[in-house]
Structures are given as C-alpha cells and as structure tokens.
Amino acid sequence: MTASRRTTRRSSPEGGRSRDLALVLAGRTWLEGKIRSIEIGIDEEGTIRAIGRSLQGAPRHDVGESLLLPSATDLHVHFRDPGRESEPEDFATGTLQAALGGVGLVADMPNTRPRVDTLDRLRAKEARVQGRALVDVLLYAAATPRAPIDLLARRAGAFKLYLSPTTDVDEVPTSADLDLLLKRVAATNLPLSVHAENPDRFDREIEPANPPDWNRVRPVDAERAAVDSLRRRPRSLRLHVAHVTDATIAGRLRKEGDSFEATPHHLLLSMRSGDGAKFKVNPPLRSERQRRALWEAFVRGAVPCLASDHAPHSPDEKQRPFPLAPSGMPNVETMLPLLLARVRAGDLPLPVLLAAACDRPARWIGQPRGRIAIGHRADLLVVDFRERRTIAARGLHAPCGWTAFEGWEGIFPREHYLRGRRIVEGGEFVGDPDGTIVRPEFAPDRSAPQPRSITE
Ligand code: NCD
Ligand code: ZN
Image (cartoon, rainbow, N blue to C red; front, side):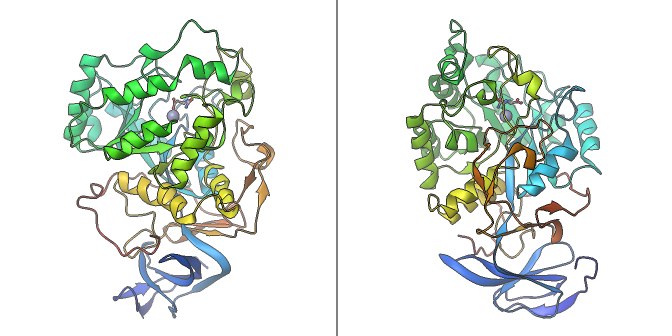
C-alpha cells in the first residue's frame, strides 16, 4: 500500500480544509467520549490532514473493528549505545522493541559509556542513531556542573539530571552546584528530567538481599527529599520528575504543576512480586499498599506521563549477589501492551492511558504527535483488543532475554504507522531504519499549536 501511494485532492468535512491526501486509514477510535467510526487522511509528509466519517480518493486501508490509536512517546529509555561490548542493547535492538510495543518516539538517557556530557559525545551518539533507528529518537544530554550546558543545548533534545548514583552514574551535584545548574538549564528553555532520590537518606548499614531490603536502603523518604530540593528552581524551568513511586509525592508535584512519570513496574509490581535482582530497580519497587495508591492515582488521571525506564542488564550481571547486581529492567516493548490489557480488563479508562502514554509526554518535549488531530504526525497504531497474548521473554525482542512480566497478559499493536508509513504488520517489523532524531518544536502549553483533537 505504501509503495503505490497516489496523492488525491480531498476535502475534509471536519478538518475544514482541502489537502492532498496520500493515504486514508479507516477504523474506529475514541472520539468525544465514545468509540466511533473514523477516517484519517494523511498527506505525503506523514501529517494528519483530514479527519472525517468518509474520506475518499486516496489509497484506503480499512482496519475494520480494530482501533486506530496514536503511538506512544516513551520519555525514558536506556539503549546503552555506545556501551560496553557485553551490553545487551543498542539503538537497532532498542528501537525494534519500541516499534513492536507501539512506541513511535523514544527519549534516550545519557548514562551511556561514555556519558553524553560533551558536544563531541552527543554528535557521536547522533551518528549511532542515523540509519539504525526504527522509530524516532530524542537524545538527552547530561546536566552536570562541569558540562557545557549552552553548547549541549544547541543539539540535545532535553537534559537529564541525576541527584543520586545509579547505573553508570557515580557523581551527583552538591546542593550549592544544584541551584546554579538549574538556572543554567532553565536559561536554555530545554526540558529537564530529574532522577530524584537524595542519597543522604539512603541506609548504607543494610546489606540488601532482596527487593524489600532494597526498598529500605533507598526509601521513599529519599525521593521526597530530592523533590524538595528542586523547589528552589527557576519557575521557567520545564521540569519533569522521572519514575515517581509514591502517590503523595505525585499529588504534590501535580499541585505545583510539574510534569512527572510513573513506570509500568512501579504501577504493576510491588517489592513482593519477585525475588532476586531482576526485581532490583532504582527507585526500588515499593509495598503493595504504596503500589496500589500510585495505581489509583494513575487511573484517576493524576499521573501525567507513563514511561518505561527501559534499563536492560544481561542475565550474568543480574545473577551477581544482590548487593552487586545492577538495577533496572527492560520494559519498552511491554509498557503499552501491559496497560492496554488493563484497559481491556476494565481497570483503566482508555482516554487516561492515551493521555499518559501518548499526548502528555509528546507535549512535554514539544512534539506535534500523540493525538489523532489535524496537524499532528500520523504516528498511529492499529489495536485489536481481542488479540490477547501471554507475555514470555522468548516471544519478546530484548537481547537481555528476560522480563519481570513473564506470564502477564499483553495486547500488542497489530500495525504501527510512523509518519503514515507502516512499520509493523501482523506484529512483525516491516519498515526501514529511517527513524529520525527530534528536538522540541514548541514550548508545551505556551506556543503549542492547538490542533483539533479527537482523543480528549
Ligand atoms: C537505570 C539503568 O540501568 O540505566 N537503572 C534503573 O534501575 N532504573 C538507571 C536509572 O534510571 O536509574
Ligand atoms: Zn532510568
């Protein structure tokens, strides 16, 4: 279908403008409070130009009873590229998992080897994306006291600040450095994601042997203290707090109007969900009571963003004694399927998921995508809620070869369109490595274009 694209002039009853369409996708979607039939007209550049009940002329693909949904934007992945020889991931393998899991844009963290804290290293990472990425990529640069923030801001898509040690991060800014750093990042107008744990609150007396111990070593109190230390930031800073695990912290950030994310593992797993280092992650998995409170906040729409914190480690690394094993788990391929299965089960409203997985993450990084709306990118999924699958590591594409969600139910997209081109068909990748590097195109909720939206 994509090969035989013709361009047809069509008027759009709801878009109100006549445009050249290269493809019409027909199906059903979430529209003004219910599931309705819809046709989406896409132009040659891969932008949505018309939305209507019946658009004719252009090559047409009817997905029948299946849903047409926007693809997700994942603000938090670690694709380990460049990394060690033994590293079980790179941009090719990471973006394949993203494509198959319905994620059309990933934001890659800077704690690679080497760390992305100079312009040369940023350029070197860009070169590794080009010609290899299967979906779009935004690159974070590391916000450290010694990094050339202004120079990095010319090419990076966003900054990442680590307030505590974690994988490949040993040094964190002092309290005095922090204020200046926040000012310097605010002046660039780029978004800043913060790993908010305060290591002064870690309990170094405990020798951790399992996930509940890890929760005592790095308690919620450490997250609260780190979030407090961000209060002195300039108001203009586009702040986003990564992997929030606690509903009271979520409530506080929301009141202050800050962006933040929750991960599928903090929403669905507790510290008792599994033993061993595969369940070791930063921040730690919390108690079942805390997990449930976070999940309830998410279901109410009180958590702005969903992000995977996809952080694979090889089985050998994870088999080391618990205190020495690295933290992190793979998640980019399973994030949306796990949550779509919760929608099917009736536990989560579809519009809440679409806002958290698609719309708000894209807004935070100033990208016109994440909604089925005129002027938005035609980054779309075809989802059939009848196609349930039991998640098993052998059916996934993570080179690390394991998942903490073994045996869970997932609903994987049947098709995935990137810029109007089909990259996944029948659950298989059928596209080309033409993912592009993206940067913010507008400030969220300030100069953002206001395309007509039908997903909220
Ligand atoms: C991440 C990793 O391995 O890169 N690990 C993790 O436990 N989440 C780093 C991080 O996000 O802290
Ligand atoms: Zn992370």
